[in-house]
Image (cartoon, rainbow, N blue to C red; front, side, top):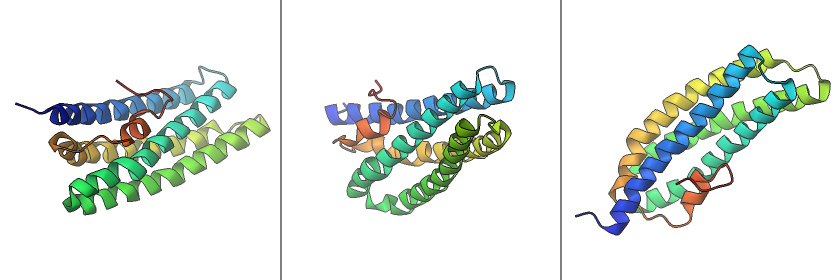
Length: 164
């Protein structure tokens, strides 16, 4: 029979997958809207910047909370965590470029949506690979016995409300 902590850990791995799915959904919508220009440029840029902030918050929560806790429980995951943190750095540099392009576009009123789209295409490809790897490797550890101290809100609450 699973313990209360074990049940909670399974829920954490499911929440991780749900958070990743929500981020996938958001970037897909922005990329689709950029391609079709269904929304005004200002709305697209706002959504783009909100997505950048959400992905950054998610990764900061992982780096500062979840990974630290996992390494305390499972020091054997150090190489996996190092790879994930490296990916976060790569994605952060792309997010920085996207934010810069979006800010510049908002000021000039002549957004280069094509350049933003290219950056988001690259980011989406990296995200997909990263999320799949993370879910295969980290979820297993979450399912085992990782305590949920204060990090779940940081990892799953990237949109201002804790995911359920």
